[in-house]
Length: 72
Image (tube, rainbow, N blue to C red; front, side):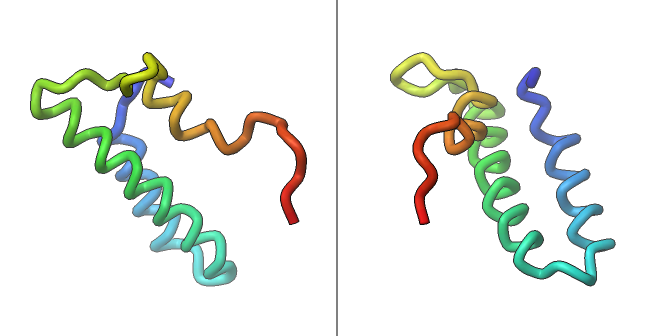
């Protein structure tokens, strides 16, 4: 929530390392981790952590969970 990417990435890696029961979950976490890595690189290179529309990095990551219609 405070755009603390490095701790989040470390926790994602540790969780994936310990998760040997649910590989699909690891695949989802890899996607989130990749987004955090992109945002961390952007923030680390003097870039703003907000996209062109003014959304925070947290909003971008959680955008898929907006409560819109379920897609099957």
